[in-house]
Length: 258
Ligand code: APR
Image (tube, rainbow, N blue to C red):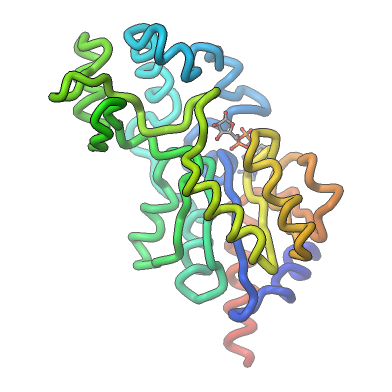
């Protein structure tokens, strides 16, 4: 835990701390990761979930997407100790923003449970919602997924437009506003944490390097090594449910001593 102690020593309420998270923080909640052993992309073909396919074959896209959502989100997945530790760090004034690549909504659940207001930027959107590609209406996804599973392929909005899961598909641009905000938070950060991500998919993979160029301390918490480990100041190849509660308790203990 030397790496975590080094990170804890740099984190204080005046420092701007930004956490970038990936599928690894939701793995302990039962949400499968995309890469690594038995990853989602070993069972599903990424090519079936591109924006191009959504546009050219929305019915086929939706048929496959229903299976993918079942595999990803099962029925009852809950935030785990990793999500909760980040929400506590936010509520205690240590964490200033969470940038997540995850679309499972679990950071929001943990934040709500703790009344934490730390901004959560969902870089890849949120799979619990759908959005009409014509009128832009966003709504709760479950009823629409039901309709699709019952044969409405693709499910359509009252305006006649086709619904799309409210996530960023391969080949689709991230929302300019979201990525701009993520970039400025990264540039402002004094400490930038990469948590539970293989850090190979852009733009997330570039954010830690951008933080390093503006002088931030880079911390990595990830079971496997990442391409960013080489430029990180502290690397902890430890499970998020072990590392994050430990980081949170190191800071809480220090508060008590002060
Ligand atoms: N604790 C810590 N790290 C973990 C844990 C855990 N319990 N479980 C898995 N990991 C690590 C793995 O070692 C892996 O490096 O989490 C990382 C997950 O990496 P990916 O599966 O590649 O997920 P992610 O980095 O979020 O993928 C980015 O790729 O498919 C697209 O849009 C999708 O958002 C996703 C993006």
